Length: 398
Image (cartoon, rainbow, N blue to C red):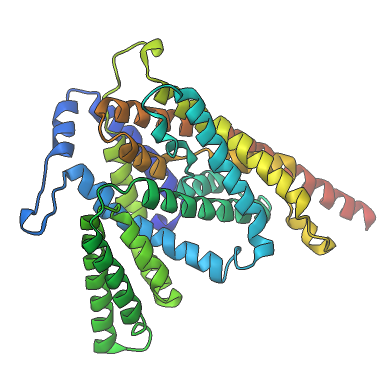
C-alpha cells in the first residue's frame, strides 16, 4: 500500500497505462478494445446512460477529483496557500500558465470550429509533475516542491471552474437545485464525522458515502459534469475526516482509478494521415502545453516575484531563481489526466478530433516531461556541487 502512495509509483503507473492503452488500440486488439470502451452499461430506470469509457471518466474519476478538492482545502486552510502573501505569486504564475496556452491554442485554431477547445492545454497533472520531480530531483531545495505543489493545486482549482462553467450543457435546474441541497445535507452529515465512534461512527461514514453518491447522481442528471459533485463533497466535509478518507482512497486512486482512466483515454487509433493532414487542434495542443506553460508560468511568476518580493531577508531563501522557475514551468506543461478529460469534453461531437487531441496531449506532455527531467537533473547536479563545495570550505576552515 505504501508503494501506491508514492509520487514516483503513481507517475510510473500513469505513464505505463497510457502507453499500454495507445499500444493495444493500434494492434489487432484495437477494434475490440475500442468497442468495449464504447459499450453502454445503462441504467435507464434512473436515467443513467453511460458507456464504459464514461463510467470511468464521469464515475471513477470522481474519486480523483474528491482527493484534489480535499488537498485544495488543506492547502487553503492549513498549507502553503493559507495566506494572501503565500498564495499570490503561485496564483499569478498559475493564471499565466492558463492564459498563455489558451491564447496559443486560439491562435493556432483561429478560423476553425475548434477554438472552444482552448481549455485542453491549460491543465497541469499534479501527480505526474510531482512524480517527475520525485524521480529526478531528490535532495533539491524544498522551495521547488512547495511552489510546484501550490501552482498545481491552484491550476486544479482553475480547471475545476472551467469544467463547471464551460462544459455544462442543457442543464436541468430541478436536478441542479436538488444537487445543491444534497451538498448542504452532506455538509450537515459531515459534522457527525469525528464526533461519533464505534457503530455510530461507522453509520456516520456510511451516511456520508450514500449522500456523496446521491450528490453525484443529481449533479450528473443536472447536466453539470459529474466530477464537480466530488469536488463539492470534498470541499464541504470537515478537513480532518476528509484527509483520513483521502489517505484510505490514495492507493485506489493512484493504483487503479488514474491508471485505468489514462489507459481508457489513451486507447485511440493513431490517424493514418501525414503530418500535414493533422488538424490545427493537434498542433495547437502540442505547442501550447510545453511552450505556453513555459512562457506563461515563467513570465507571470517572474513578474509576480518582483512585485511581491518579501522584504524579510529570512524569507528570500524561499524565492525561486529564474532557472528554478523555468523548471517548474516545464513541469507544469505535463497536462495529462485533466487535459485528457477536457479533450474528451471539448470535442465530444467529433471522435476524430478527440483522437488527435489525445495524441497531442500525450506528445505535448511527453515533450514537457523530457525537458523537465533534464532541467530537474541539472538542478540536482548543481545542488550536489554546491553542497560539496560547502563541505570542502567547512573542512578547510577547521
